[in-house]
Length: 329
Image (cartoon, rainbow, N blue to C red):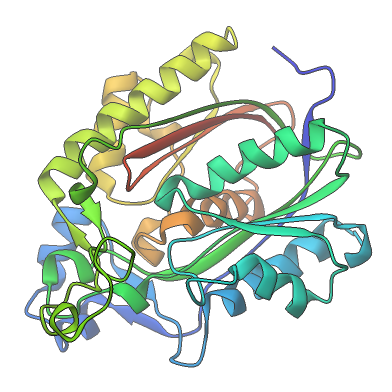
């Protein structure tokens, strides 16, 4: 099961904006209620970035904390990957913005887009690039300013999301959580399940796309719920089978923080106790690519994970995409 040269998470950091918006406050903005949101999602509050805060600013805070936690100098980082669907701009990449703001060297930097699965996809990519021995230390960040693409007239979507960032410093040397394996997949047969229709080459920005609110997130919630549970279950089962691990050996599951009912359904289908699932979505909502690293860093800070224990990180996102990662704490 163990890789001969595992990748270690040398350090982690996370950040959420100070602007806390609970369900009651949101009711002043859209036609909804605290009970409606809590009973359907489990979310009580979320953090929203200020108007002047960009995705790279959120990433910078999390990355700075991760580097400090790793006790690593900035000139030791030679690879930067930012997972996001809310970049500062279409191009150049948010990773390039982050590279400059951190004061790094002229190192390889790029964005990865797999929506809410993005951070786990990025871990897989970084692990492979480190294994090539062409890179030594990678900074992997999941960062989102979801509030920038929400339609605040659509109560079925705007109540679900929040802003934040989580970061990890990866290395083939040192100590830390070991990344033992990955299982990624995608199904692009129906991108309209969760998408932002306009602004790309298929539907360039026009006055009509602005007037018809095509530059905001659109979601088929019912279908996403069913698909999310199905693909995350598949990813976890395939990951465990590949590495010869039984579900009873799993000590912790850190799932994408989208909806508590999705997490409960996943636990039931995997036959893994909800007690093993770490959830913090009630405080942050769905932060997309930032969701898993935020939860992983918070659980670690709370002392939930103990040395030698096995964990599974699992996520799903627009695409559809899905990913699962096996980790030894």
